[in-house]
Image 1 (cartoon, helix red, strand yellow):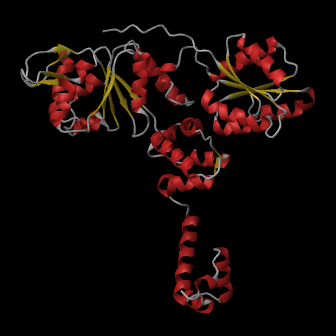
Image 2 (image 1 turned 180 degrees about the vertical axis):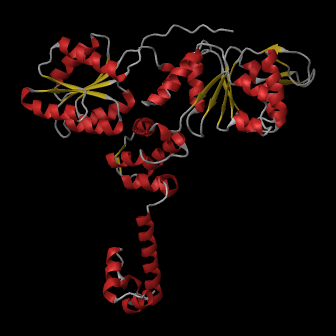
Image 3 (image 1 turned 90 degrees about the horizontal axis):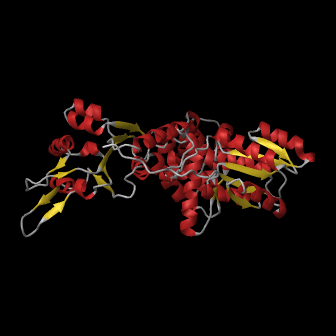
Length: 449
C-alpha cells in the first residue's frame, strides 16, 4: 500500500540576535520578525551561548563590541561548539579592521551600523542558503541532533522512505540512535497518529516473543491476546535487534509478511497486518545468513529500504552540538546550567566513542554531576572517558608512568634512602635526583615506610 504523506508546513528559519544595546536589539528583532523569521534576542555573548543549545538557531547575528566577551570571542566559541553555524557580525566604522579579521577567521560576513533593512535581509538569505537551511517542517527529526553531511544523507533517505509503507532495515553500531531514527520515520509518515511500539527481540523466552508478536488464543475462558502486529494497526512496530529472533519465529514472521496475515497461536483465525514494520540490528545479517543463523527469506522481506547509521567517529562535527544538547537537557532537569571549557570540547571530539552517542551522553551527564564549578574542565572529561575509550597512551606517557612507578617502588624498599635507591637502580646520585625531580617525588615522603 502506498501511503499518502500529510502536508508539511514550512518551518521558519531561526535567528539568534545578540547586542548589548537594547534599542538596536529591538530594531533588529522587529525587522527580522517582519520577514517571518523566528527570532530570539539576547544582550550578551554569555546569554547567546546559553541560548544556542536550546534555541538551535540556523544563523547568529551579533554585535562586535560587547562587554566581557565581544563578538569575535563569541564567534570563536561558536566555532568550537557548533561548527557550521553561520555568524554575521555588526560593527561600527571604527572597528572594520577587526571585523575583517573575524571574517577571515570564519564569520560569514560583517555589516556596518546603521544597517539598512534590505542589506540585512540579503545577507540573512545568503547565509541561510549556504547553511543548507531546510524549507520543510523538521519536527519529525527533532530528537536527532546533527550537522553532519553524512547523517543528513541518512535523514534524507529516511524522510523519503517515510512517504511509503515500505519495510525498513536500520543497521549500525550500538548506541548510534537506530531507535530514534525509527521513531523519526514514524513521525514523518502518514501513520504518525497511530501506535509506535518497540519490541526487543533479545528479551524473554521464545514463547513470550511469539505471543508478543503474533498474539495467542488460550481458549473460551481466557480469550484472545492480540499481538503487536495486530495492536499496532495503523502505526509502526519496531523489531529491535531482529538478529536475535529465534529461527522458528523468523520462519513464522517471514510467512506472515509474505501472506500479510497474522495467525495467533492456538487458533486458525487470521487477521491482516496493517502495521509498518521497521527492524534494527547491530549485527551483519548477511554474515549470519551464511552461517545459517538468519533466514534469507526474512532478510529480503525486511530489507526493502536499508539505512545504515554511521558511528559517531565518522561524524565528529556532531560532537560539540550533541554535548550542548545534553547539557541543555541537564539544565532543564536540574535548573543548573553548566558548560565545558573549550579544551574539554576539543578533547571529547578526539575520542573514538565505541559506545557512540549513548556513551557520549553518559559521559556528559557524569561530568555535569561531578563538576564542582559551572565550567567543566578538560581534566574531568578525560577522567570520565578513561584510557580505554580514549585509546592507548603514547609511548612517552607509558614510559613515564612505568618510570615513576619504578621509582616509587624502589624508594619504598629503601625507606627513602637515596644512596641505596641509586645503587639498586644502578644510577649515580645526581642522575637519580634528576629523575626524582622530573617525576615530582620527594624522598622524605618515603621515610619511615
